[in-house]
Amino acid sequence: MDILLRVWSKLALLLPDWQLHLRGDGPDKAKLEQMILREKLPRVSILPPIWDESLYAQAAVFALPSRTEAQGLSQMEAQQAGLVPVLFRLNEMMEEMLQNGQSGVLVPCFDEEAYADALLRLCRDEALRCDMSQRAQAHMKNYTIERILPSWLRLFDDLSSDFSQL
Figure 1 (tube, rainbow, N blue to C red):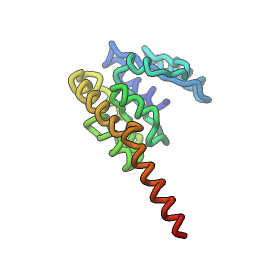
Figure 2: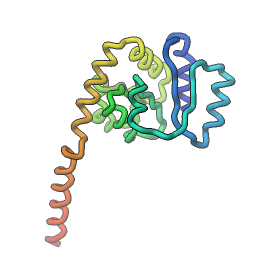
Figure 3: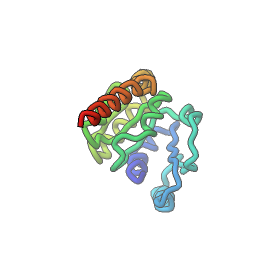
């Protein structure tokens, strides 16, 4: 989240009506709080890690500049709720799950300038955000249990028949 705070330091003055809410209570919380105070970052809060679907309705963009999480459940939940995710492109698989430029934005790994540009564009362009939000929700329908379960059942059937032939 230190990356997101550095990005916010570039955007806060350009987005005076926006707030940054971080969720979590991990080992870096004190370091992040110090960074917020040291850099005098406006409109930033660190909230408890408690999460329920209603909290997504209070947000407009889902920013997760993770160094390691290439495909997270939180990103899928956010898209399902209509939030537009902005993520680092950590691997090729992310393109399928995110549909870069359609239902979310993938930014080159660790490019904080590109990340800031992507967030700024989404925050300033409500029509783009709404369009991508609708596409995110539609795309996530491909990953419902009703769509995925038959594939898994076929896989298990294929595997069990393969093993029975041994």
